[in-house]
Length: 217
Image 1 (tube, rainbow, N blue to C red):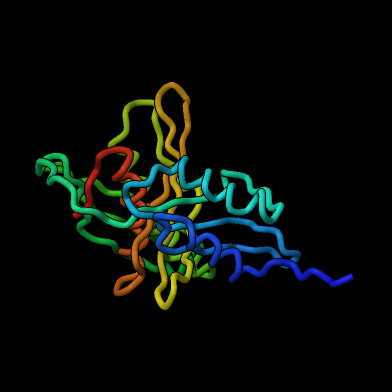
Image 2 (cartoon, rainbow, N blue to C red):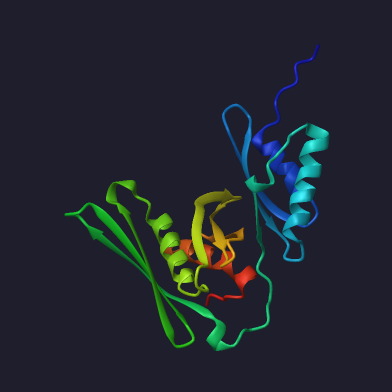
């Protein structure tokens, strides 16, 4: 009997790139071959649920791979959108880093503005962790929290940097809870070229933009 080799990460990614409307795919696979996560870049006219359904059709029936839909994140290629009024745009102004050697703490502060109202978010962690980009993403989520209704919240659920071809992309996933307690997850991305902390902040803003109508500048 011919031995069947397990499908490789690269083969799964190639299959996913063959789905209509999918521009790129990145798969996280455990050592034993289990898929831990799927990150997709899609054309803007595809609905998230439609994309997830096509992923399931591509992997489950032909290959017997059952994937939890919560492990699939979808980001969208930027498209031309109608310009929002200046008062509605969320403008990223700065990302500042402070290293407190005495306390062994790293502090990241993100400054933004919506209309005439300044907003500021802050996050801190250990200097030894070297998690500047994650802290920048968390501080940006705090900025978004200041724009929420009472009892609603935006939480940075996950952040990581993945390779997309020859480039690196920051991926941020937000857990957004409304005042009724209903929760949904939003995913955004930003290229890591240039300032990596600013890219992390923009990935968080990109996650919020499509759902909440907030715009970064």
